[in-house]
Figure 1: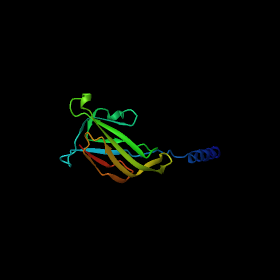
Figure 2: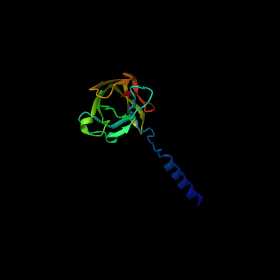
Figure 3: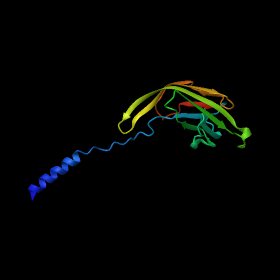
Figure 4: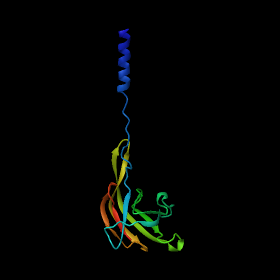
Amino acid sequence: MIKKLIPFLLLTIAIFSACEKDDFCLQNPVTPKLIITFYDETNRETSKNVQRLSIWSGTKDTIAQYTSVTQDSIAIPLNSLTEETVYSLKKNATNGSKAANEIATFTIKYNTEQEFVSRSCGFKVIFNNVSFSSENNTWITDFTPATITNLNDQTTAHVQIFH
């Protein structure tokens, strides 16, 4: 009986030792989003909500989570297939009527670099030499900084917009 059990145990050990452990991607999200915080233009230390904020990029639809929301910070994705992403930021500080809409264009330019994270996560994109500009400033009075060396995490705000 033991002679038959030993080959069975060896076969079982060989089968389970040949299994590869599951590789899970724990870094979520891998490619960072641009974090923007909004501040009061008169008291630059105080965060300030943007009333009825909507955001869209180019000809694409509005970003679903930022459709007529009121908040003091946002995290928006950058297009990793191009070297520029242009967002339109619309606020409506009064009563929600279309006549009260104020739209500003915020442009982000960058160089992309792919970095291998792990076999399960694949590659992440790092945005280098990131620069910001704003046009059609109906409500954005200033922003800081004008450039950042690289955007590779989501732990702190990258840009402060004053309104």
